[in-house]
Length: 118
Length: 107
Image (cartoon, rainbow over all chains, first blue to last red; front, side, top):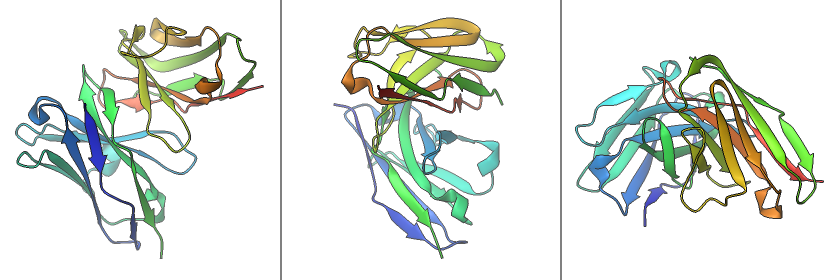
């Protein structure tokens, strides 16, 4: 069955970078975009960007431009999301999600807690 | 960006009650509106897409309607397992945006 398996929780200091992985299982990896959505503690959902694993093209939300990079590795069916110059407001659960029919997200990873603290 | 506004932000209803959640968009679009259910500590789950199409496996007590700028999610008979936060999301115009969420609890 379709699964998205994310890497484990991370703790970083302000100014550092974090790299979270998302491994796709159970479907043709290159046939679907993968999106990243984050959720700060007790808050709503914020879309960060997306990658087309077939070719690696990306689109990022304006507020993350210059700080985020999404990449894909077709040999391992894994997508990566790197967020740089971290600040305390970046503390959140980061989710990867499979995109279908526009921007519908039909399968989600389990989430990765990223904590930014000095 | 399209702003999505949900109301109410909190609902407390009895088992078997009908629950309706509204989502209003800052500008109109056709019907590419999705609803997600999120239980505490879990990832969101797609319930409805294209405003009214039930995702496979979702109970039929959930339904969606609307177009343009006004959309609704209805739970026809609230069940204990429906306790969750529900989010709407416009799924057609870049960038995709979410509503602030509606927390549903049992009275």
